[in-house]
Length: 556
Image 1 (tube, rainbow, N blue to C red):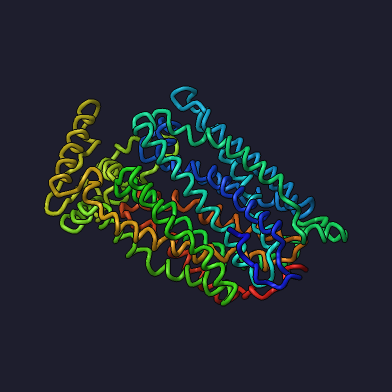
Image 2: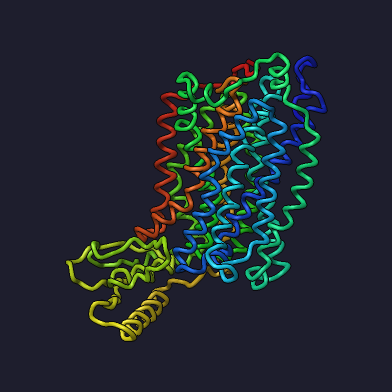
């Protein structure tokens, strides 16, 4: 794909056919790494059931997302370790190490015994595997982006590096196709029991192919020139972060570009998928297919926006995407509810749910140790049940000592006051309340799950495509911009850290943070404030401090 670009360039500056094939090979190898990394996110619901079954369902899912985020948490440390190696030893050899760590860690998850087999050791080992993956990915992206940019002709860096930007979506797309294929081939019951392991296990084949591809690569011409001239950095970490002249650009890159790019990316591709499955109760296979279609339609625009950034600059496209996301997320996710689960949207409009309780008696609906049954106050009993349903509710305060009341439209359901009953009587009272509330919600039109026949699939795909288009705007030009911000001798290190702090921390923690915000407030849209505020902050900081880079010479 990449090899088709640049044929009209003057011969003295055109990449050779061999170099262009090398760039394509680099991109393909990176696709496989992203496939490995994203499998976990796609299978979070199954992993929650297999490895976090010792806690309540809501806490288990948040734990599963937190373990997903743990892989992102360590990415900046991987950026420091492998960025330093890449700037001192070379881009190519660093690729091979990160690839091996990623592939073997993914394969190991497919073999890992579950909680029922080995108890708490299962989630601990799972977490270790996620940390290893995160470290590897922390070294992968900066190397791939730097490698491709240093091969690209002047005036084509945005176009060439945009192929690297497609690899994350192609990796997610490949993972989606594999998961969908196994789900249909095995059936939901077998897939949930053991079939979820197969996508992890076949990654060992991808590892073999990827290692072979990477072994064909030549070293980057820019790095080879520095090595031949003896001008490579002897202390890239000190040069990159110990000197204010460079550290300043690291901070500006993070806050004025990458931070917003990250939340737009993870909101558009991951949070949208989780929102469909967990909140709107669309069955997993349908949700995967719909988002796969949307991604297939949007993916070419990574290259379009990369190409456009070579013409008009990186800054207006990246900041424009962040601004559009901040302005449109609430209406887009509201429209997604109407399209994907119209019965839920109608019920929310006709019979909104409100929990009337003394707020000081209400706990945050998340239990880190899995021991809280949320039955010590009537408010906790009411909110624990509503959190499990995933139905949006508002909060209204009541005087201290007043039992909590769940208002469903015009009907009220009083939660039992646990201080007045104990033992079996308390258990029976809670069960009776839950049964009454379940019946009341059903009578008000709240569905247990989305009716597949009622899903407006065209509208859902259109909304998911709009979210993915915002991703292509912010992500298509970002690699070229980061490469151009920093000098070649410390480029790998300098660009990797802000990229992975942004995408690893601001982006990777987005699903966990957003769902925790929803659990805390009861409002299914409240978690959107996180990406909206971060994206808006990036627009302001970027406009004030981020330079335009697309005409810079990166050979220095």
